[in-house]
Image (cartoon, rainbow, N blue to C red; front, side):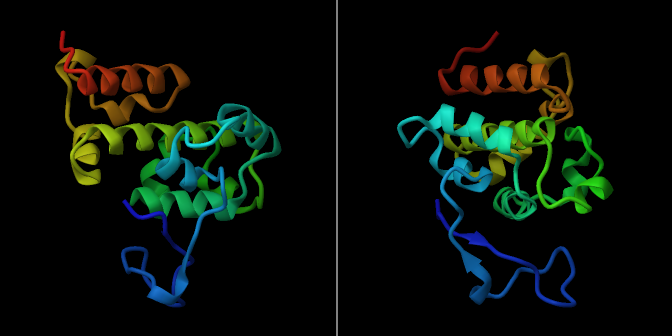
Amino acid sequence: MTERLLGGKRRGAKSGDAPKAGNIKRPEKFSPAWVVVHSKDAPGYKLELIKRIRRGVKKSDWKDLILKIGHSEKDLESLLPSSISSMQKKSVYGKETSERIYELAQLYSLGYAVFDSEQSFKQWLQSPSKTLGGKKPFDLLDSSFGFQVVENEIVRIQYNVYS
């Protein structure tokens, strides 16, 4: 898996268009996009994430994460405690929104590690699960408890423990 991210959008480009290769940049260490690729790689990892959540996630780091996990802001709006329109007005997000962004980054990191491909993980998120009462895992990600339930299910898959 590559450590590089797609940077900003080309002028006049539609949201589905891929940015030019010249816009590729490395994510800042401990940013949400970095977490997707390096989960638990560094000493003091969790303490650093807590510090960053308290400081707030920068808008640019949020945009990098969206590109890294291959979603649009609209796809993820229901998972966040702030509306996309209010997020677009800020350069740094509050603690609650920042925490949800990091939860999302960690979940995708785990999912990418457990499933055969990023696409397989995204398909699993959108497929109804018997163990989750017929609900799609993605639909549970609008709360911290839902993140925990989905994360537990991914770990069960990782260790082939099915109920």
